[in-house]
Structure formats: structure tokens, C-alpha cells
Length: 288
Image (cartoon, rainbow, N blue to C red; front, side, top):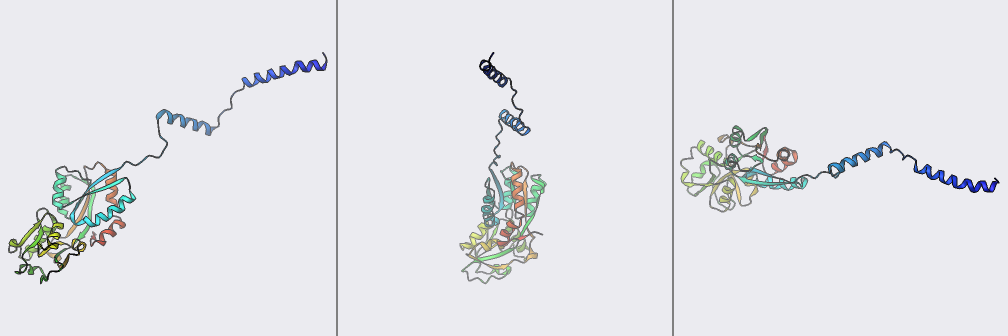
């Protein structure tokens, strides 16, 4: 066989061998990283998992709070909701005694911010506030205010008996802590019984302030913090501190809350320097 015929015969044989070799070649083994990726991908597909970051569910917290906290908490609400866009704060402002009764009757509430230790203690004793999630928070002082333009000679508690003072406003003592403190001060001054005909009672301390602002009362017992919020009244005098019980504001997480984590977070936030700076700006003092 000559060289030319040999080449003609050899070339088709080589081509066939190459084809057979390619068909029988084993696929390259995947690297460890590729194998791990394929396994994770397969697991995610099988379980239906979404690899995107989880979103935080929106939460609405209901806070039952003493009426005297209204302005400060409205400011705190703006800051807190801006930093926690998934949380909405809804405040139920009122007299601490009335709020206590609402919680006892099953009204929805996640936190209770009271203006009286007595009302908080009642819920603690009833097992309605979480153990270890309650503490004294703020303090306040009691003052007597008169309408801003009043030409009043009232400078001390005994002056409430003068004929020019026709009406004296206080909160309902049984449900409004400010009213209870006023009753104590008037009793200690020997004036509670003699002033009964002049008494105008409000459902909470803010209504007492309103009565005085509008002139429906010639004088009213309110907290220092309430007096600071109004440009329609002026402080006539500070009620003598030793004549009434210390004004403490305890706070607590309601045991029946359905949002334990969010309620705890706001409870903790209310004790931070940021929140306390707002509250002291409204005249409150931090409990020691």
C-alpha cells in the first residue's frame, strides 16, 4: 500500500475514534463550592423558602396613659414612630383610676402609664401587670392655677375661702389622682368641708385646667406640668409638698398584651435619656 492510500484510510479512522472518545467522556466533577450552591438551591426550591430578608410585621400598641402626660407623649410618639416605622402608638389618655378600671374590665392595653402608685398597685395585686416589668418612672408637683388675666389675691391655700373665689376646680378624688392629692392638701389645711359648695369636679386633670382657662373656675388644682402647657392660666402658688402624698408616675407592661416584644421595647425606650429629656422639658422629674 502506498503512502497516499494509507493516509486516505487513516483519516476516517482517526475521526471515528475522536467521536467515540467524546461520547464516552465522563463529565467534570463539580467543585465543592458549586456542589454547596446546588444543594442550597435545591433545598430552597423544595421548601419554597424566599431568600429575601424577612419584613417586620406592623404592630399597633395601645398605651393607657394619665392625661397629664398628653403633650409629652405626643412629642415622643413622633420620634419613636419615625425610628420604628412598623410600630404605631395609640394613646388612651384619661384619669388613672378610670384607666385602671378599663384594664381590669378587659379593655385592650399594652402598657399602663399611671399618675398614681395606688392605681398601678391595684393592677399588680390583680396579676394584670407583668412582674418585673413595672417601675416608678417620673414625679410631679401640685399647683393652684388661676385664669391668666384674673386679678386674684390667691397666693396660698387659705385664700381659696375668700368671697371673690366662687368656684374651685379639682379632679374627682375617687378616680383622678390630682384630685386625690388636692383633697389631701385641703383636708390637711382644714378646708375640705368648708369649700364643698365651691367645688367643681373634672373627669381628669386636663378638664380641671380647661375649667380654669375658660373662667368656669376661679382656681384649679393641677400638676405643674399641666400649668406649663397653657398660656391661658398662671400659677398662683405651689401647694405645700408635705400636705399631700408624693406624686409618682409608675409604668408597666400589661400582662394581656399580644405584642410582648414591641411593648417591652417601648417600655424600655421610655426610660432612655432621649425620652426622659422630652419629659423633663415638660416639667416632670425623673424618679430616683
